[in-house]
Length: 203
View: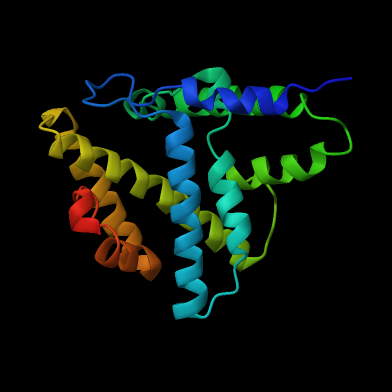
C-alpha cells in the first residue's frame, strides 16, 4: 500500500502566497514554510540561551515547517478576507481543520500520531499546559510574522509599493510582540537589517 502524504506536502512549491497583491516576485508556500521554520528555531534558541527558557528548538522548527500545510488544499486565504469578521475566521478555522485531517489521513496509522501532534501544536490545539510549550508556539507565530515582514521589505526594495501598508501593519504587530517577547526584539535588531543586502555585502 502507498501513502500520499509527502507527495501532497511536496506540492507546497505550487501554492503562491499574497494572492490579492501585485508581486515583483511570487513567493511559494514552500519558501515561506522553510523561512518560518528557520526563524522559529532561531527565536527559541535565543530564548533558551539568553532568557533562561527550556524550549524544544527542534520542535519549534517542525511546527514552523508544517504550520500552513493545510494551504496545500485550501490555498492561501488573504489576511483581509480571513480576518474580516469573526464568522469568516471561525469558518476558515473549520476549513483548515478539515484540510489538516485530509492530509493526516494520507499517512499510515502507525506514523499518524507523530504528525498529528505537530499539526495540532501548530494550531495551538495540543491542550498542553506547559508554559514553555505555549511560549514556543507564540514564537512560531512571531516567526510567521517576521517572514511576512521580510517579504514586504523584499517587494519594497524591488520598487513595488503594493506592500507598503502590509509592511507597516506587520512591523507594528511585531513591535507589539517584541514588548512581551524579547527574542523577537533581538531578531529584529540583530538579524533583520541585512535582509535585502547584495551577495557582496553579505560576504
